[in-house]
Image (cartoon, rainbow, N blue to C red):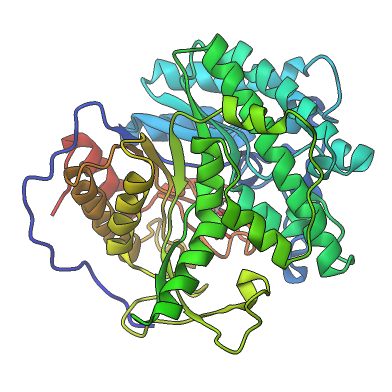
Length: 471
Ligand code: BGP
């Protein structure tokens, strides 16, 4: 593909607010390894089958952050991070998910990590679960699909808040719920079931996740009023392929269903009618209990974690059944003017500003942390160096658009590139890299996992040092 270099941007004095939280992000199963050490149980992420060609790649070692955490925090310090977004591995704390008491060795690991971060003046931003429900709960009752999962998550969240809240002020409950619901095996649902059954189960799970989070939001506000808590939502800003009303409606319907439903429930505490209509199109019925509406209403997030990578462009399929599922009513369109990664994710920084403006219109002045934002490449080490100009360009242009959005009045207080360090991609293992730090291993060769700073590390370091965008 055509490698686009940095866009021509008219520079103004792009200074960021003094207390802006410059971070970087990872998640537990993607970096830690040590997936059965110190009493850890297996999680859905650990057992989930990777695509066939990556069968030998698993979470046993990942990039071995479990044994390199001190060195990794040193690198964060050198980078100048003000915050670090990571997740706690649920099954390190509750190995099977249903224990009454937590695994002390699991708590200890995160105490050490958090102490080290705080000592380095790095504010921890912690995700409670990032695709990693304990597999024990899936075996016991089907995981999130079963209503008992609510109590097991709330118990876990209570422990986390109690143990870590003095040091951790920023909490994210569940990472990218909408992604798990669509890729149903991420919830531990058997791939062999027919599609209707899988979706029926997945949207029931989605409902339980909403209730569980609402309980945790309320608990957190009541007992830890200094904390901020919200979901980490996958926000794919969705653009119409043309100005025709049907294409614009198709884009809106997809964006509403996939991204805004998640945020509407977290912020407004009500399940939107447009979401229920889509489930009706799928012939899905959600089983509920009296009092659920009140739980959703009483437990709401006080900030939004937004995972933002790219836009998607869609057109309406005008021959489709108007009462069919939204994904059958649209086609995805490729814009020949945009650069795409090898995996089909575009480079469309203005889409970030547009998306942030939409969020602010919908939830006026809501505090927003961009909890993921990044560019993937295949990369290798050449004479101890990794040159990643496209990632630098991506960071530059997205930080620029975020700055413009802040000037527009959007309340963005934190930015976290995905990812701090190379890690297992969800579908492509080590082939698809996002890190500011390179890790020397490949899918099938663990090597020594030695760390190397990429060019983008030094670029981002300058932004953090000056608290402003570097031309
Ligand atoms: C988000 C996830 C991350 C991360 C990222 C990149 O959906 O929250 O866990 O993996 O996307 O996706 P991928 O790994 O598929 O490239």
